[in-house]
Amino acid sequence: MANVKRSPWLLHYDGSSCNGCDIEVLASLTPVYDAERFGVINTGDPMQADIFLITGGVNTQNAKTVKQLYDQMPRPKVVVAVGVCACTGGVFKDCYNILGGADTVIPVDIYVPGCAARPQAIIDGIVQAVELFEKRSKEHDEKVRSQKKGSEVA
Amino acid sequence: MGKRSVIPFGPQHPVLPEPIHIDLVIEDEKVVEAIPSVGFIHRGLESLVDKRDYNQMTYVVERTCGICSFQHGMGYCEAMEHVFGVDVPARAKYLRTIWAELGRMHSHLLWLGLLADGFGYENLFYQCWRVREKVLDMQEMTSGGRLIFSVNKVGGVIKDIEKEKLDIILKTMDEVEEELTVIKDTFLLDYSVQSRLQGVGIVTKEQAHDLGCAGPFARASGIRTDMRKLGYAAYPDLDFEPIISATGDSYARCYCRIMEIFQSIDLIRQAIGKIPNETDLFTPVKGNPDGEYFMRVEQPRGEAVYYVKASGKQYLDRFRVRTPTFANLPGLCEMLKNTQLSDVGLLVLTIDPCISCTER
Image: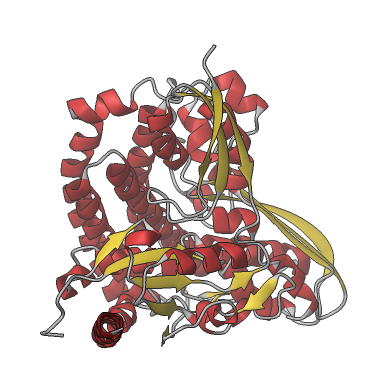
């Protein structure tokens, strides 16, 4: 945590959740729980986001939107599935329109359980995501550096 | 006539955490037409009646919406109780009223916060959500869950609120009222807020009636509609009047919702004052349901309709919800016409949209 060089920005998208997890995500960003003390900030723009919080399962119509939002985010990126619906489909798993959890369309790194997920659990997920993001950006930097070196030699 | 172009709004948009897509046809900066497209959040919850029996459905119905979760469960259970023809113990009715009003308070405070964020008052947004946390603490203390607390069951409720906890609720209501009185002045008297809200997005009484608007949206346009007056739960014993405003603009909607929070505080005080001392919390139901019923409940966002149909089997034949936002969407599209593009985000917020209810 101590060596995070820049503040990772959060993008939140409501898949097909019941709103319960959504407002808990928002509540965990307000001063009572204050996830922003870990250096994250909420953004509405996928192109500036590093951590993708998705609530709710994926259905036939929003699968394309979720995929598009994920693709628009720059590398490195981390995906957090918040709530049991985003993890597996939850109580709506048997519904005809639900394809499953968020991991049916995009790779998910961290799963936050709960129905609705409590702010404490969401913050725990965000902190883990920040750590993972730090690790990934280091790897990414090294990769870019070695590629640059390679091109200089050539 | 200027050049026409189309601007897509949503499904992912900074002002609204919920996925609705609106195609805005604009002429210069003016919106000419708003065409909504839905389905981003449709789950097919009603079809689960084939797979879950009528008791398990209570938990599914509560997850129609996480904000008004308790009231969804209550509407469904009241409908099923009419099908079974059972009477709910009086204490359970009062407990339902207390929980329902707590739910209304947290929903309206949430909306006030989002509205403040919508017109750029971030500190006010945080203040509203800080007060809201106190209401959520009450829900957690009495039921164990912050938002979705499954305390309803067909026939009554499964948890009691003890005397000591009722006293704590009363004390918290005093605190909330005090803090809300301070916040209220910013919403209603601040010069910048007034100029942002007054006269914007007017829906007249005739329009609201013709388009079938519901809840605070209709009440702000001067229609006296409140399903609580139909007398479910303990509402017939409580003294209250629907809060209406005549102007029908964004300011009126804000005014109605703020006043409804004070009304909810008053209703909770009345309910706690009158709650009977009984040990029975539910009437046991026997056998399988047979018959159909149409139940109307006043949710934070307006009138919700529940239809259940059963034919002597463990599983229901049909379950249907019509939620308030569904009724308010035509009003929204009418309201968006001839407004400035920069007002659209705020105007969408003023109907308090709950898309996950709408699409179920």
